[in-house]
Image 1 (tube, one colour):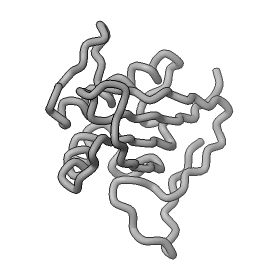
Image 2: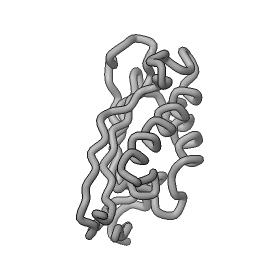
Image 3: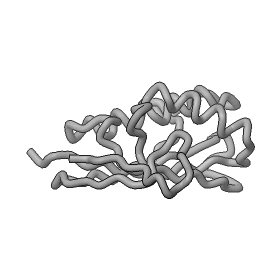
Length: 133
């Protein structure tokens, strides 16, 4: 269904896959998820690692609504407020606990000036491809 490829002519990626080919027939588009708990409270104010973990838990919950999981994700876009190399390292470290180490999704990381609320440090949107049941 999903084939992950890193062409040898491109630089070796760190934490993402250059190209993902999907042959499933149901595509899930998950809106940008932030570090809200189920009650709408912000988790981990001032703690990027806690917010990353909450965001990926939220993504997994959203995908589960259609019988999918993080293993079905083929593309993410990560928006990070006031991006720094230290923040990139934290995101990669925490995200690794949620995504496949050998077949991570294609991914784009974007530094932004602000998100919906000043306490939010990142937002992640995702695309997943699954077999339609």
